[in-house]
Image (cartoon, rainbow, N blue to C red):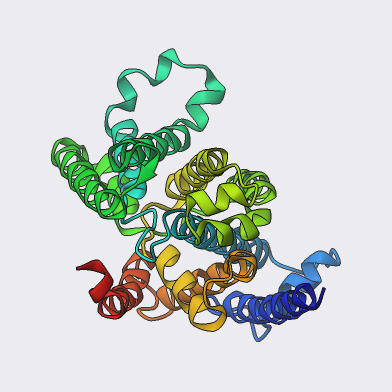
Length: 347
């Protein structure tokens, strides 16, 4: 009970921090509200003030608020997916972008963007609307399945094989994506550039609703797995002796992680290293206790991506820097720090 109370305290503090960053993000931008803050405009909008202009309403609600919510949802899911994979594979380098999930999702999304016009009209209208998202999910799931098959033998997963196979799949995926970029038309090229650099500029409330459904379903299954992942740190045999259904746990994490990463890539493109940075920082604070790390990563992932996105649209005003560039810039040094720290065990 004491441990649970400490978790509630940490979650509450981090949630307050996230709310403060959201207010700061809402008030950041080049648009002038005529002496009012964006938060004041949002408050008047919620009260139904008829004096607000349509442009003020649109910028606050359809642009900034929708983008903030998307950053919170996607940052949270990327961090939780990275934390879950690292717990499953017992390795701090196991993230969706390093083991091929992001590459697979981006590849099939690119195939849909460039070649979808040849077969999209034969599909049901509901499928056409979300075809890129469906393709991204299938791509991430197939990549995860392929990595798992290659790196698993006799019921045991070889971490080195997992990382190497992930690198190979990532290379293949991005090479095919590069070919699709070469043969694409101008409008398709703009869309493909969006995927490769990562951006939240296309945020809408419809997309946020879909992401919210994915998040609720995924967290209902994943967040209670903290103790099971702690048991996995002892080894699969010891985890089985403790009553953990190891194979079922693996399948659940693989499927849900593919669902989350595929959904995120479908709406924001490639935003790397969030699933690497957040678990690494939390492990410095809470060691490898996934009962703490897993739920806290859901909030700290949102904090990280929302902060990065706010900077991305304010550093080079009035232009916008793709957020994937900033997360990669932050994640690169941390990746090197992990390699330096664990270099003896990796040799």
